[in-house]
Structure formats: C-alpha cells, structure tokens
Amino acid sequence: MTLFKIGFLTFTLIDLFDIIIVALIIYWVYRSLKNTVAVQILFGMVIIIGLQFITEAINFKSLNWILRTISDIWLIAFIILFQPELRKLLMIIVRSPIFRVFVKPKISETVDEVIEAAIEMSEKHIGALIVFTRSQNVQMTVDTGIPLQSMVSKELLLSIFNSKSPLHDGAVIIDNNMIVAARCVLPLSSQTKFGNKNLGTRHRAALGLSEQADTIVLVVSEETGGISISESGDMTLNIQHNEIGEILTNRLSQT
Image (tube, rainbow, N blue to C red; front, side, top):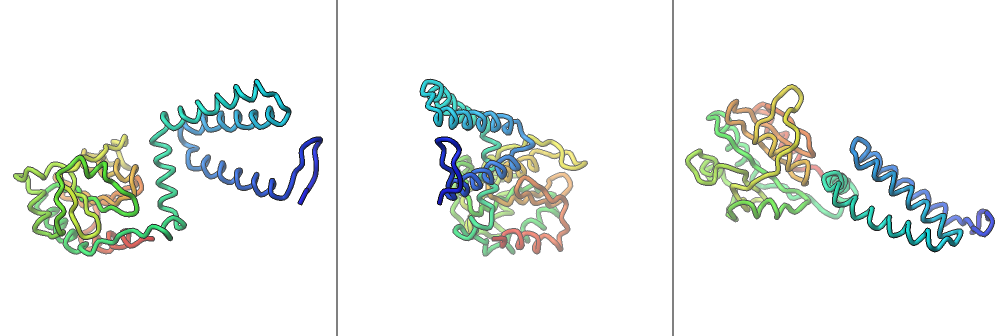
C-alpha cells in the first residue's frame, strides 16, 4: 500500500513499519549506551548510514562506495573498541523476559548446602567466592580453574575454602547441582568503591563477573565475615544470616 511519493521515492506502509522498528532499536541501543563513550561513535555510524542511503538514492556511486567502505571499517572498529559496552548490551538482552521464555535459568537444588556453608564461613571469617551460573555459558571462566564435577555439599565447600586448601584462592563455579570447577579466576571490576565501601579483591571479582555474565556471585568477606551478593553489576552488601536464604533463592528463581 503506497502512502505517498516524493519525486522518484515511493513510501509504503511497509516502509513506515520498517522505519519505526529501526528507530525503536536505535533508541533502545542509545538508552543502554548513553552514559558511555560508545554512544558518540554510534551517532557517527548512524550519520554515515544515513548519508549512504541518500547517495544510493540519488545514484552517487563513487561517494556511496566510499561511505559503504567507511561504515564497514567503522563497524569493526566499534566492536573492537567497545567490547565491554557491547557485552553489557548483550547482557540486558539475555536477561530480558522474552529471552528467558526460551532459556530457563537453572535453579540449584543445593542452595541450602551453600547457605549453610556460607553462614559457617562467615562466622569463622573464611573468605569465599561462589558463582551460580544462569542462562549464559561461563566456560572461559571455568577453564581458568581446576575441574571438579562434584555434587555440592556444605562439607566440600568448607574444605575448598579452607585457607590450607590449594583450591581456596579463587572462585567455585556451580552449575545446577554440580561444582564444575574451583580456584577459578574472575575478572576484576573497574569499580574500587561501592557506595561508601571500599571494595576488596573478592568483591571486585564478584562485581566484575556479574558485569560480564549472567551469574549470581556470593561473597564471604575474610576480614568482616559479611555475606554479599553480586548480580548484573550491582551488589547487596552485608546480608543478614536469616535473610540470605530467601534472597539467594528468589534471585536464582527469577525468570
């Protein structure tokens, strides 16, 4: 169905829907990246694509070829330079309700074992990092540690994080009801403070992984014994022992 014509251009209802969808996608990407340097590069790409469309419409072949070449190079440079921002954007997509219809997060059947171990480690001031995977594969992180493939148990977690254990320095990765690896190295967040609290290495590692992957990371502070949970680049600090079970279960149950 033709809506109107501008010279040699015919504007149809399909074109209108196409423009609306593209505009919504650009707006959504802009909102997700608006506080980053990447948004400036994004604006440059949009301008070049617009000019490319105009030159193609008026048959400026040479200029169109130049703009098309620039846009291809610009896109590759954008992906290389702004990997963290793009990773954040993909994480927003992965965590959306639409995506979770197709990918159901695995809820650990052994949360009680983890909670009991975390509380005991908190009381004894034993530091710990425990990662729960959800809809996203974290194989690269698993590969940095020692593979275990063991059932989760309170006793095993206490043994792993005992300061005399060769596996205590690093994180444990839990997938469903299995500890798939221990002594895993997590990426450190660039944040050194959260609110008014200075973050130690364990808390920065928990925050760093949750910024990059769809995970929930439980932290036990060796210094204070406090239990914290990091998710989606956010952190809940110093959770009360009687609340940790409900909070962890609710977050692992989210769809």
